[in-house]
Length: 103
Ligand SMILES: [Ca+2]
Image (tube, rainbow, N blue to C red):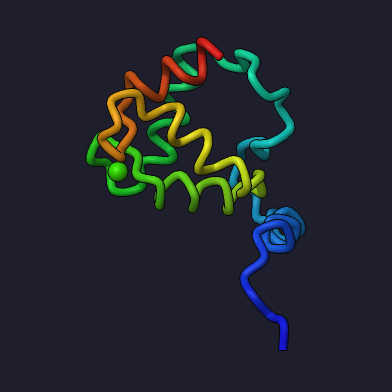
């Protein structure tokens, strides 16, 4: 029986089921490595991803957000690591905004 967790299939499933009107665009449509948002947009996105409102985004929170918005789950860990500049395993608002505005 081959029924292992498949991130690609999961992402496709999430994309299809993302008709519940969360009100924001799916991640993954933006060109990689390009600045795609303003500071205000990045800060607002930070608030949406920071589910427990402790001012830091964990890999789990980021992953949950990408899943919910039908984004590319294969990119999550890479983006998280790039954003987490001090290697604290959590991304604070400044790190998050810097990452999304500068790259
Ligand atoms: Ca958090």
